[in-house]
Image (cartoon, rainbow, N blue to C red; front, side, top):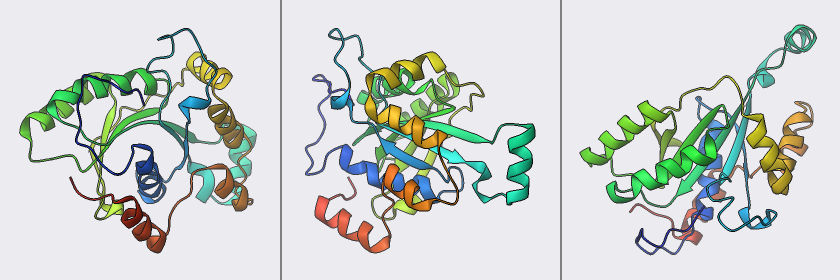
Length: 229
C-alpha cells in the first residue's frame, strides 16, 4: 500500500491492513477462489533507491490448490505425468473506492499484481449505485485484466466480485524473483506453496493468514469498528 497525499479519504478507526482478515475469510470459502492468503509487510522489505520499488509489492498474495480435494490416486497420477494445478493471486487493498481515486488505485493494482495468474483490487463496501464508478470498473477491467472485489462488512461471505480478473497462464518469474529477494514474507509464501502438504493442515494454518470463524469474525468487526461506509 502506497500512501498518496493527493487522494483524501474519509478517516476511519480501522486501517487497510485491518481489512486483510476479511479478504482472507472471503477468499477461503468463495467458490471462485478457495485459496489461502498471506499478508505482505512492505516495511520488512530491503530498502531500494527511493521510488524504485513504488507499486512493486502487493498487499496480499494468495494460492489455491485445485488438487487439494482430489482423490489420492489422481494426485499421484498428476504428480507423475503432469504438474499439480495451482493458481497464484495478488491483491491490492483499499478502504474506499471513488471515481476520483479509482484510476490511480487500479493502476497501482495493475503494477503490483500483473505478475500473478490473477490480480485484484479490493475495497470495502463499494457503492454499486454509482454508475460512473461501475462503468470505470467495467472498462478498465476489460482493458487491463485486473479484477475488482467489494468486501461486504455486514456479511463478509456475501462480498461481491464486481469484475473477474483475466487469467494469465504464465507467471512472471522475473518479478516474483525480485519480490522474493527483497521481501521475506513473499519468500516464505513461495516456500509454503512449494512445501504444501494436504495431510499437514496445522502447517497451512500457521503459515498463511488466519481464517476467522463466525464468532471471531463478529468480534473482530466490532473491535475494529469496521462497518458500512
